[in-house]
Length: 325
Ligand SMILES: CC(C)(COP(=O)(O)OP(=O)(O)OC[C@H]1O[C@@H](n2cnc3c(N)ncnc32)[C@H](O)[C@@H]1OP(=O)(O)O)[C@@H](O)C(=O)NCCC(=O)NCCS
Image: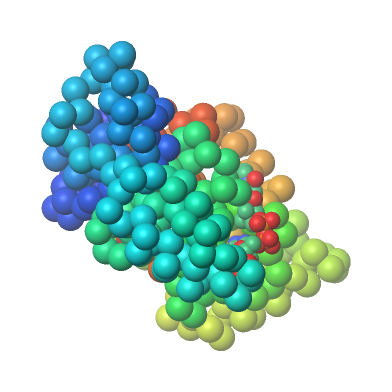
């Protein structure tokens, strides 16, 4: 049991999916402990990817039994040749040779990506050791970007005892363009609804509300909002608006009269990575929200990048959330 009812609900929902979840940063004890927990609680079926001898050594030193957990050897595994061919076909236009492809898929991040791409597993959860850049490149070059979406991005579910929000993009794209911001909003709203069952109301955030200020930074958010309304008319969205106008009903009514979203927003789309990353950390550290994520989105299949400071609990939660995506 977690302290947070939302987390309990996600873990329970994930049980019904019984997904196969691969951990490519598997020599890290947190991957091993997460796998043990997921298997014990029947939240998902974990598999570890990497060097089996090293993984078993870490597990045994830390007293964790992983005899029943499948390990894929990325260097000697039966799939390595096939995965190298797949990677070569995807990257040869960029000058990758067959030898480079074979070398690359020996890296567990790529091997796990192709286990996902070929349907052997349902989810990959990495990044507890590897950098965001390395995980992102492995996911983009193996499973690739989802159809109709121009950009891979990320979101956090920020939970309070009585409410929750989706914050995006707080981890991947430093300075998205207006069309990219529009796609980040669509992916975030879609996933928020899938995971929580709550109807999304998207606020495109800015330091200006409904034309109160003029600046290039504001124009970008205005353009993204216009594109969003055209590309996804089925989603409730509005912008540009300030954070207080987005979430405080009385301020939303005053600053943005007539908006169906202002004051009631639950999907908050930040204009760039500075504001997004600072915004989620402020909410976590000063307002006491529990931040679940980052969850990577916009890929054809769920390949998740954790923060390197993550706990075993975070890894279990992200694995459960990704099982639902
Ligand atoms: C995602 C990231 C790794 C890309 O960096 P990069 O490899 O230098 O980027 P490049 O422009 O060389 O792109 C490499 C390839 O990935 C693709 N790509 C990069 N970012 C992408 C994205 N967000 N969505 C889809 N494709 C993307 C590019 O189109 C390119 O593809 P190609 O080789 O087929 O042309 C980079 O933006 C990054 O590191 N972001 C994380 C920021 C961060 O540090 N966050 C931590 C805070 S929690």
